Image (cartoon, rainbow over all chains, first blue to last red; front, side):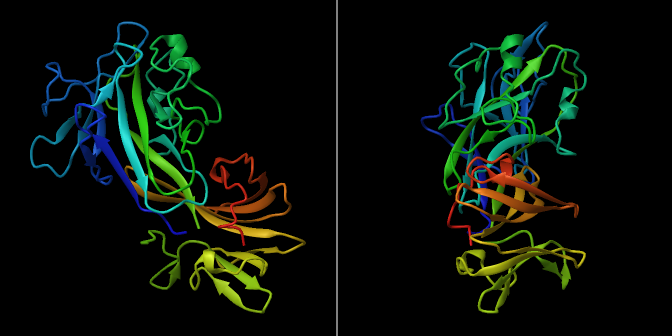
Amino acid sequence: MANPNWTWKVNLADSDASPSWLTLDLANDKFVFGYNASDADSPTLGAVVLPDTGTKWAEQLWVYDASEPTNKYKKVKAYKTPDSATQRQKVISITNDAACASTPWFTAYNATDRNLSAPFTGTTSFAYPLLKAYHATAGAPAQYWGQATDTAMKQLVVAGGNNPNGLVADTNYVPFDDATAKERLFTVSMVVPSDLATGTVNWRFSVRYTYV
Amino acid sequence: MNDPFPIKVAGVQVRPYWIAHLDDGRTVTEEQLNWNDVPFGRITSLQLQLVGGQKVTISKRGDYQFFQFKDVEFGTSGHRYLGMVIGAVINDAGDCFYVYCGANGNLFVDTDNIRSPKKPYFAPIKLNESILR
């Protein structure tokens, strides 16, 4: 075994069936949750819209492509709405070219200190992860996925991970199906509670793994 | 494979590495040998060479099977080395003990079971003979 190389991609095409993958430069590119009022490709990106009450899903996912001289924001057009008219799920591809020593997991950390306390600030009723995800092979969670009610959002949290749902650093994560080298697809969504603080919240999507 | 975590930079040790003592009297280290090329069942003791110069040693008893691995995170700011583990599986049920040396130099010793691990970084090695030595 050796330390694997990792490739991250996101589908920019209109469908998942005919993907157009953008390989991410992880040192420079960023995922950005936001919206554009015209719902068309545009470098003009708006913040996510807070619901008046309760929770909702973020409208759109964009990728900030640092290599582009202009129009650095690329809208991720391929998303699904299987359970809720307002939910937006985005598919991320992660590939490792060598086996790991143990099963990796996909999660998200606060961008600065590897914990997720910062995204919770500015909310009063908010005690659940903003980011939800599941592994394509495992499929969507049997309950609550795609439901935007406060109850459903909060019950998506399962302590200790191993159940596809909210991403909370080392506490809640989505495990890979095994430790072999191959491509895996993860579906991610962002929850937007009405009392989310305005401004910018930075996360870092991450894979934690071991090698010999 | 381009390992982003060198053992030494300009001759100065920057992360822990393993040292294996074999039953034929040889000593092999991570600087010399791929872990997969260490002969199975021949390790009499496994050491973790720490950055500060100290060593942690696990000596073989009975049917111990040794393992080592690096704990890494990779995301939108590149690789992040979290720590290194050496340990031994002590029975067929998969019970093990191990030493974890974090990137900050902190050491701790803990027990687990590699078939149903408590710690997520073990999950699940499942008595994978490809890494046990």
